[in-house]
Length: 307
Image (cartoon, helix red, strand yellow):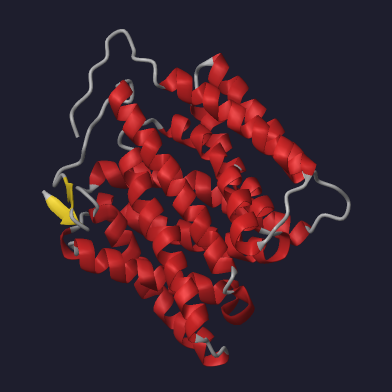
């Protein structure tokens, strides 16, 4: 067993049948906690944009994640095989693109709209991976909620929207890559390996960026909190959740992220909700309730391996 922050983590990959109701409950709970933490972290990070800019916040976030997981887990990079290195390196690239594009989008179009558009990535995963008509209908319903929430028009910021859509592609890839990491590396080794390699990759940009911009202690503190809430907590939660629920259910359940994002934007950044945003949130939540209720029903031949 490995211990991270006082929590015991199995030293071998956990295999829990996606049909197990207990495993699904834990997986959904982990996913919801991780998504709420991620959006709170994004809102805190956005508060540091005036001083550090989106790139600066991304740099600090990645370095903080590398330090926390590197020290806490101490990944064994030298012993990785080629089939283990591939998802690690792919995840480093995907996370870099996803984080930078999302934060640039948040800076232009706001947290709620940016995250809602980013949600199209997991929604695509849910549509592609589900075989049940009800789940597909719920995914479509969530898509309608996205349209109502964003209320696109001719005055929309096309650059900001495009950046959010790039982040959406990254999020869809992240779901599958994170699942592969959980299957090929024990415990939190995969997540920590990605964090350490990503941190090393971001050191040169950090040197250049902070030679051009003068950070202040409050802004650095906000970026550090963003790193913990926006990276460390959700990465660990998502990895553990994807061992308990299928990627298609994970993708559908992530439709709750726009709800967290709008709430965080309102509470932390003072962004006011419009009537269409409230309606869009209601539609998305309704889709999540239906999917969650169906996924928690035990299958006739339910077999779950204890975590």
